[in-house]
Amino acid sequence: MKKIFFTVLLVLLWTVSGGIAGDLKVGDSASDWSLPDTNGTMYTMQNWSGKVLLVNYTDPDEKDMNEHFTDAMKKANDDGLLNEATYTGIGIADCKASWKPDALIRSFGAAKAEKYKTVILFDYDASLRNAWGLREDSANAILLDKNGVCRAIVRGRVPDDQVTQLVQLAIDLQRP
Image (cartoon, rainbow, N blue to C red; front, side):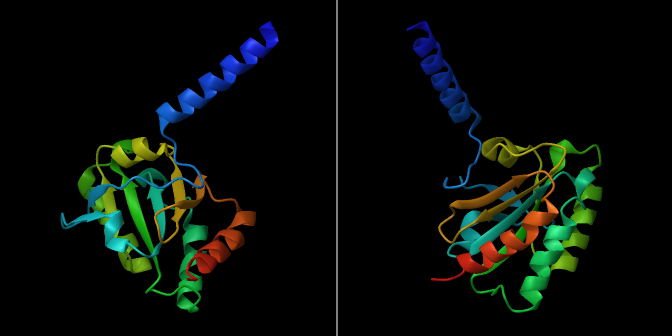
């Protein structure tokens, strides 16, 4: 009886702590946010409503951690496998995680925006990191379907052996 009681107690504590942490998981609807770009223009997920959305949420000190993955997504886009009408990739800088001044982070962001022809946003107070339970001092890749449901999330470096699968998932999610 004690064993069952403690097992149930552990399961309840695990469930409650997961709910409190609010970690975004595959199958969850992603909570919305509002973040500025380098010009101060505010964006929300609604700006890309109806599109597959790749969110690269990164500590500026680790800005190149998932470049291999982002380059693979860019290649799929350049090859016409990702359609701009149904897919968008964006970057979000976790400014609070970095010691770098915000002006320097915005400069890095502008360079990435140019390289990938995308929007780079800035999370100055780590609100999105906290809301989605993302990894601090790292990179995070989140793939949302057209309805804003998380279909893949990698906290940290995207493993080399998962890059092709994630690119294919983004391609597949574009289908009606």
